[in-house]
Length: 193
Length: 316
Image (cartoon, rainbow over the protein chains, first blue to last red):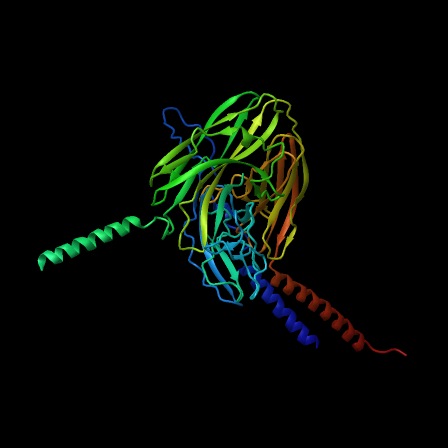
């Protein structure tokens, strides 16, 4: 027994030693150059000043396709939004009419956070939401925050500009008449100082 | 025969031209078609009671298709410590949106063109001093794809931080901070929460300085930037009146194993707080292996003591 423990002890020691030796002990973050903010220049040399204003752009026209809905099934689609900003930003969604309505405004699919087969409703999934959906409201709600959510590029750069895909979930039942159900969703982008 | 063919072809050509002309730009929109840009994304304005101030924002069309946009104003506040924007709630700090007027509010922009949108802030005579906050919303409905189930209206908010001269109350409190000491693979994040007790906004400077524990070499400082010029360990968030804001700095690319000395500095108004902490990074599997190793040492010592006891000659 003692011999077995001694062998295990030696093996574990070797394993830990090898692991410590092979694991990077320091970061390479210090290889980033220091940002030089001093604008003074030597006599006789000219200095170039470039004024960069805070800019925010939005491309939300890639609205996705029509979702084919079937009774007692949860169907999904998506729409894409691109925001470009050097500063952190948020993307908020809202809708004056939160229900999806048919052409005659007679039948509606209400906005819900719980989208399950057989229960009529639709919702949009937030960027960091893994389960369920969020019901769109008449006042803007944040669906993406570049300071807290992964930007989707797996780079861990929170405020890097990129495309954001928002998943739409829809469920209907057999009582919902045939037709095309739509609503207008407002996408609001704003910087976060 | 030839005349008939030419007539038919002319008719087809005319029909094609007509139908192409009738295609709405919104019927089959693609990424990059309607792209609206605003500058500046935020601005600070100094105001005085009874004053009339002129300013502007600029809207640019950086997409492939022309669009029409409108401008309007909204109140600007925040919902929580995370500073989720709130463009609906009105309180004593959101009167600014009622003071802003536009000489013109609807514009058309061709691709590559830009449009200055002037606005006038007319400050009433009897307003108290302090901060006032609003958003100018530039909206285009030309981004609504007709064939999409969910049609998108695009809005950009340009924030305005105004300071009205008068009786200003300036005050802030550090509500809390965190600096981890032992990390088993989770990301290193330092936080600071500051409350604004006054009636005007101020900025908080939150920095980290990280040194190697053994060599004292600087690993990350408040001036370190990434390849895009973004500060890695320095933030400067704004705190609005009567709100509380939490701010986090995450050390991206932190090593899996190591010991570091971390200094967190939080400063705002005339207050500065400095916290020092030794931080140990150890992956969970290595911590498990070390715990197992210690357990084996204890077991081995116990077994060794027992066997020695057994070997000792018995004396009667």
